[in-house]
Image 1: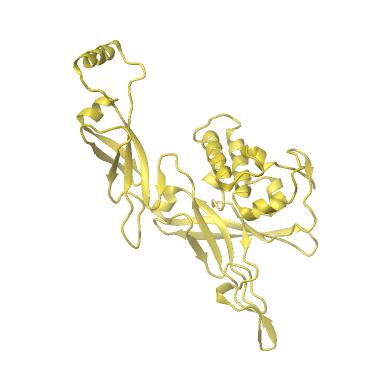
Image 2 (image 1 turned 30 degrees about the vertical axis):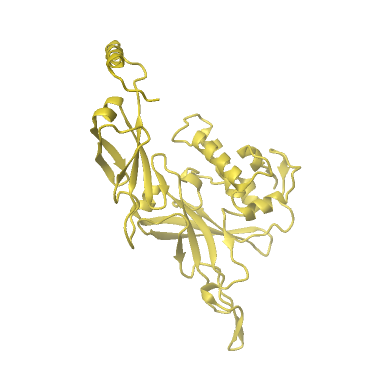
Length: 331
């Protein structure tokens, strides 16, 4: 069955020769623009899905290389059939989990039929040529050739809140392979994944014995879930430190005050010292990402001074009076 070809370069608005940095910058710009929490337009969610699908392919050198092999002559919307030999064994997330779903906003339906046709799932990678559990390839045992199963890896995306608090999250992984009849066979298995509090991007969660099956009764390999943390609309994560912005009025910055500041574990009051400047960072020790093996990160609060957009006549009068009596020169 033919599907419609998708030009992922066109979706992100980059050239086929774009660097990985250019691809990432284009993705971040478009993701911020069309994120459903920000953009309430009817087509924003669908556009957001298309952007994430394009980035899922172009951010990965292996997937991008495979995609580029299709050639530059295809155009979006053209009927497309996969080339012969496009045969992969893959894992993908499904059901109640957020396995490999960028920003956690893909919703039901996941990626397009075009993506599934090419890659058979979302981002699974089998480590061919290496055996699971440190095995050394084939070995003969009691007249039977045995080989430990290969380790396998896929990506799960979790929210910053999930990474901060940890806990158990259910996910479903679908294993796809090409059967003897040439048809795609899908099997689904559900897991309760234990997420350690304070886990950081790039860390891996191991599911022992859930990789490729062994041969001749040898043990299966392991399945590694590589953690990616979705960008958060409020907090920025750098290492174990978190960053957040808090707006203050000019008089609060001049005179000092206390303002409520959001943290992932709840709101706290922050003292704004007199004379605080816009852009100045104030630190809340230990309010960043927890660290089971050491010191927690810090939360850095960036002060943003905001001025009245539509001041009242009385406010204008007071500012005019301040203008006359103040000898402050910011330049």
